[in-house]
Image 1 (cartoon, rainbow, N blue to C red):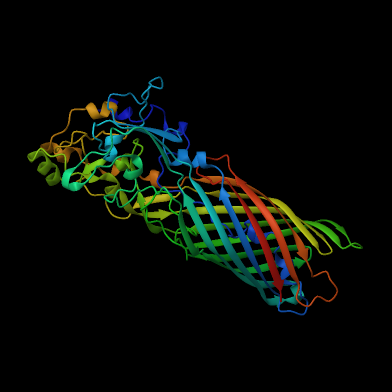
Image 2 (image 1 turned 45 degrees about the horizontal axis):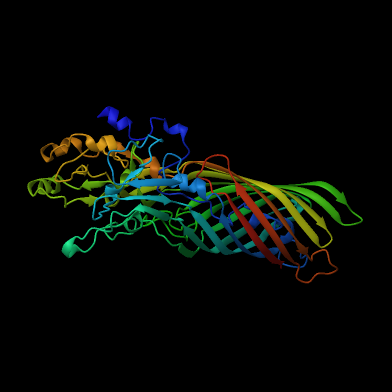
Length: 506
């Protein structure tokens, strides 16, 4: 059995691949502290643009964008770095034989496909994509100024109403339909293809929607209290502490790649600082160029999520059929029945404690002002740790993987491919307890988003009125765009974002 188990993938170590066979991905939310769409051309100086005002400022940001790395995300959710999988009904094909004219990645019987002549062949393709559009609101207010030391305190609050639209980009090309779905008598017709499989009513989790899924919610609220150590325009330095108040939604795992607004309902603490240095100034023409650093660190605490889990070294094993008790297997054996099996996805989807832990965000911007014109270009660096995933409750000790022949037999090394593991002599129901799934067999990392590093280039230009003679209510209007990319792994979302900003000082 050990040799067969090692065969379950490709013989390569997991480090030879990017992230694959994952069941969940956490995409960095937009409009968060130190992100370009929030901080560019809206900092400490605009809060004081109105000398006779209350040293407060407000901005509204309309933004929208989409991901661009659908092939990377396809490999993330599939396995063996593939973007397409060959589904076949034969157990006599070697999945590692690239020369065969009848390739197999996934055995169709694992997904309860039943055709009239028993044959089936198709190719499935993923092209995951996320689109988003949102309206961000940000208020910043100065209070308790220490004039003799040129220092003071401030607080701010920000959030965004966001619509997230995810599309798995699922497509199936049927090459052999087996003369159509099998007639099951009073139970109607069998499942005819993978498209029907992924939405079957018996599955409570792990489904794949052929259309886009949308969620509109108020994203997490960020509140901060800061202290200005230096405020001598254009030089400044400040630091702050704050909290992330969860208002979005949490994963339910009914569908793969479900839309999530915010950070998945995680409460968090944050801290950070901002520093500005003058690089060049032309006093007579009221022009200057300065360098701005915005740094934000945060820690997100644990929250219970519902997530699907694979077995170790067995991609997509969450979809294998199982017996949920010895009694169920014995009943199938006594009646010599192929019924009485349960979808593995319903068993391998559990309540888990998810802790995102630390992430950091550094934004470096070059800001240019000339009378009413303002512009900024820069780069943003973001890094986050791998999620920590732990079972919320002990895994049941009475679960066993069904042999392909069913009828009460089990196969502890069955994988999603089929082939060699399917020919292993079936274990009879009387030895059921010796071959049940243990907690150590679960690959909890399959339900966790890996650590990622991304870089974002951005540019923002606009018009600002505080340099006009005696402005009553200083205001600004800006347009900007950014592109985020990564070379860390295929778990990071590469995407473009455009935004329009408007604000007022009072």
